[in-house]
Length: 76
Image 1 (cartoon, rainbow, N blue to C red):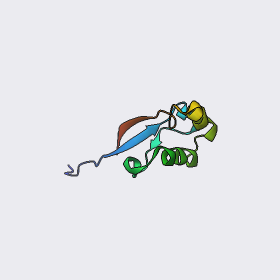
Image 2 (cartoon, one colour):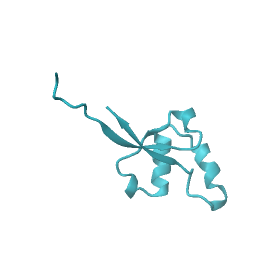
Image 3 (spheres, helix red, strand yellow):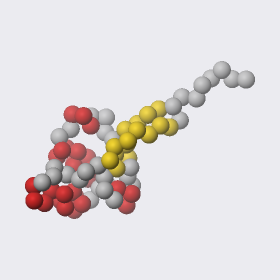
Image 4 (cartoon, rainbow, N blue to C red):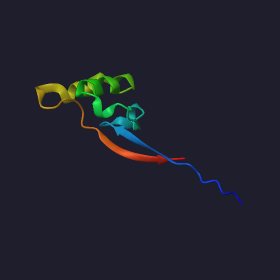
């Protein structure tokens, strides 16, 4: 018998609209709380989300970027 417990971790995940098409959800950046909306949009693009998708949400000035879903994922 082993006394070792399996270690688990928790990660904040980010999932923009239609994100599954571009490899999302992905682990959110560690500095998420300190990021501006513009910085988050840049991060999304660097991680495969198309600028064109972001531009749709920026049109008209009503939004700062796409509304993203955030959730906690647990893993081993």
